[in-house]
Amino acid sequence: MKDIYGRQINYLRLSVTELCNLRCRYCMPEDGICKKRHEEMLTEEEMVMAVEAAASLGISKLRITGGEPLVKKNILSICKNVSGVEGIREVCITTNGTLLPQLAKPLREAGIRRVNISLDTLDQSKYAYITRRDSLGRAIAGIESAVNAGFEQVKINSVLIGGFNDDEIVALAELTMKYPVDVRFIELMPMYDGGELGQRAMVNNQVVLERLPQLEKTDGDGGVAQLYRLPGAKGNIGLISPVSHLFCSECNRIRLTADGKLKPCLHSNTEYNIKGLGYEAMVEQFRKTITGKPARHDELSAKNSSGAGRNMNAIGG
Ligand code: SAM
Ligand code: SF4
Image (tube, rainbow, N blue to C red):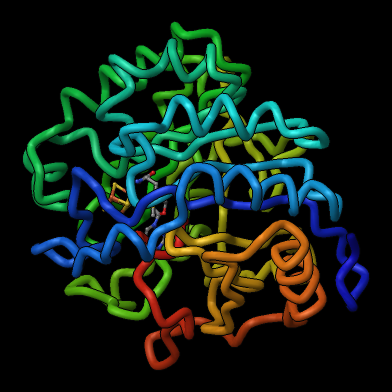
């Protein structure tokens, strides 16, 4: 279905939980989140019905996210069921990778085609600092499990943080020489509760091009990422620049939070509830979400943080 600005909305990000086994400083507070009551969260049946409702309006691509989707006990069943919904052509997942050693193969078998793994640093103490958990070894093992599990594509997402990992741009990019993976650098977004990093830590993605002058521009469908490649690499380097270059005019996505709120725009607090609704009412809420999608969100800057009203773990990044 097209929105009122002519954008074809065909992509749903489905958050299956707000909970996580890490505590990334730009995403979640240290003491976790105020855990919502079980009854407030979507059930698996509601998630599947929501995906059916979305597919009836032309959503064909689904990304499962969170929080950390792999801490959800019934994640394999959710993946299998949403992959089987008529009209859904591609189901992908975004994960911190730490549970992939045991789950990569079962996820592939449950219908997941592509996996994005978040990894901001290759240094054990820096990883422990930024995630507040000592799990780098498991994240790296997770990347290797994903590469061996036969997914169509494995991407590594690194949020660039000034004074923290901008000295690792080359090392992170060189993962594309070692593994058949894409590495994508993402600008840090000033979310609702900016945490201690704040907007001053935002690094413009142009810095990646300065540090890696040998990058060659490549064609290909990078979605919102501009694609480059290191000579001889097995995968691409992508630059995702939500702060320095708004990509609202190309935005094809809507989001469904784990507590059943449809969000037309990541950076807006407008939400449409679907928790507790039947199929027809859900379809109507999806229709409103798509037609209510704003032309663009405000610029994100030090003075102007996201209007999302939630932290990323409670939206579904
Ligand atoms: N737990 C999973 C993970 O980390 O991949 C999935 C959920 S996480 C919210 C999804 C993505 O959002 C991660 O790649 C994370 O780095 C990114 N993210 C979270 N907060 C962000 C922020 N303030 N700016 C940019 N990216 C952010
Ligand atoms: Fe958890 Fe992902 Fe947020 Fe890190 S970015 S705290 S892994 S949800």
